[in-house]
Length: 352
Image (cartoon, rainbow, N blue to C red; front, side, top):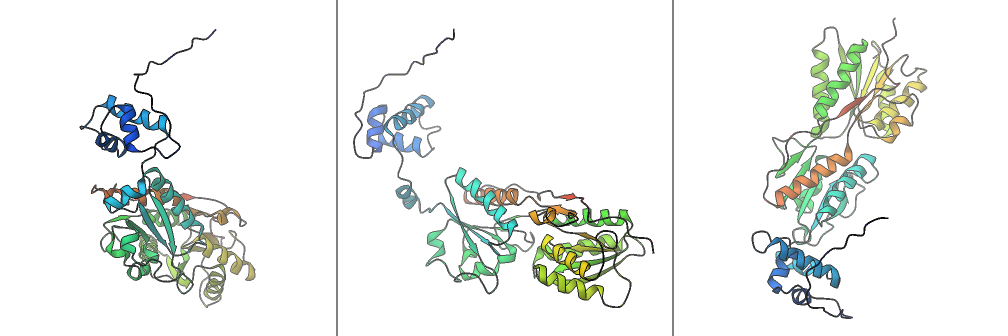
């Protein structure tokens, strides 16, 4: 036999439910407080102004009446839209879909909405999606790969957080980065430990700080070991572009690289196709690495050794940084850790 616990609640005047939407005045009457007290409690500004017991009484009355504050009117008074713009290079990229998911999750927890603005070169939407971005938005989160769109929409005049951007020259009030340099260090260390000394860097042909970091870090790590050689081939971030660039690089005179370091998993997939066209095997003849750990990495055969980037955490941290900027707080510092995932696409170089 189980005990039934009953709660004792402070009695208050019963208020008949109205067929119309309840107002703050109805809540005040039901809770026995002023409308000003209701406003403080529902706006979460009651601490130090009304007691905990009064705040709970107001919340209970609001629940009983089905009262919901008019957020649109409140935001209009405060000059806030509670809308944030996320500027990314393209919607077709799995990584940026994850960034949006993370940003939108944190935004929803704080009563904000996120509008996604893709700005791929030459195929994006109208350059100015807002009659007035400053009137329509509270702030902007932007990838450095899509930074050109900021000037077009005057997004650089709003509270701004930059993703994947040089902290020393960032346009934003805050910058959030993945530890890409460490990811490249992990890749280089893995290949060097396996015995690779001749490497082809299949570099993304995109003018962006994040890709500059990858090239610089790879060159530094390889140069630290005697008798190493690194060649670079540039390609657009597409499977066809990577195939063409890899095929050209591997058919030029000179020693064949024993490993290909790709700036992106999609580039790695193109490198796979080029190697197979040339009658070369992965990893027996040439090892291949990527960066991102997209679903593609485990769809190709052999599965790809790559660096896992937590896109959703990246989006979460970007949104948290923007909220801190809007509230006048210092955003959380430090780059987001990344992890090398070793799979079947890397092995020691074949003895010649």
